[in-house]
Image 1 (cartoon, rainbow, N blue to C red):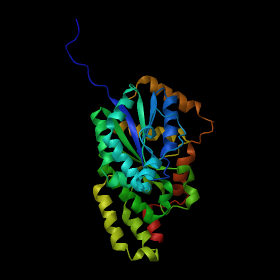
Image 2 (image 1 turned 30 degrees about the horizontal axis):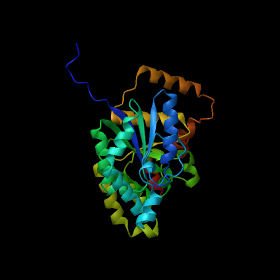
Image 3 (image 1 turned 45 degrees about the vertical axis):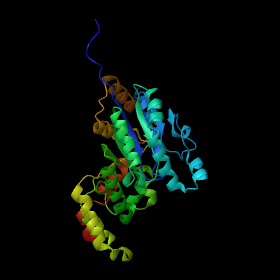
Image 4 (image 1 turned 135 degrees about the horizontal axis):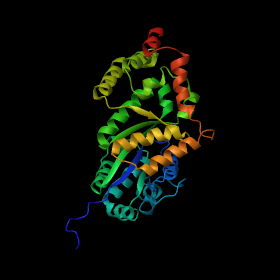
Length: 313
């Protein structure tokens, strides 16, 4: 006798990878795809960026089959920003195409490689509506917002990044993980004013504002910076996970944060694979201490707290 109870709709878990141009979204998708594959998780990458011409990863669904940025710019005489906005509006109007493509990949974990235009996530509604539609299709997604770690070396840019991250979190309306990418390159950009925890945990920003006031150019904007810092701290939402895509421990930290955000629960098999991979990686080309070494350098070598740094100023 057949059961009279209807089967529950299948849940699909995944990540939507967003962030400014050059923040490492495509590199992250490639690295995360390889990392998840080693864990035994069946993963596919969906390219939603019509400006991506060459993809370094196997792509299961590619928006270029529907629309490309070059075609939009040529036919409508639009610039890159206008072309990306039009492309996302076109995708929103043709979501049946995307739905049919995604149905071909059931029982998979999804990585959505998204465009790099910031306005798409802070002001415009098309991407937000696309994500909302994916949620209605039983996708449980986490927004992974990548930010280049070099912004930490410039207090003014870091405050701007915090405002952008906060605006994106409120606009996109998905479980959200902010990631400081390219941590292996951070020291090439200059010495940090405070230890790494100050930036990842977004500690008391008044110290950063006072440090910024030492610059004669930004001193006249002191009151504006104070108010921006107050807005960020009043919401108390923004924090960052450091990422070095070549470091397996760093990738595992990001993955666990993402899985916790969207409710993905992995089984015993994947947990065993993770433990085996981490133990086998000892002595391999992955440098586990890369990210931690940066943090320890600013905590132990200086031997100072954030308050001590400010007193020295």
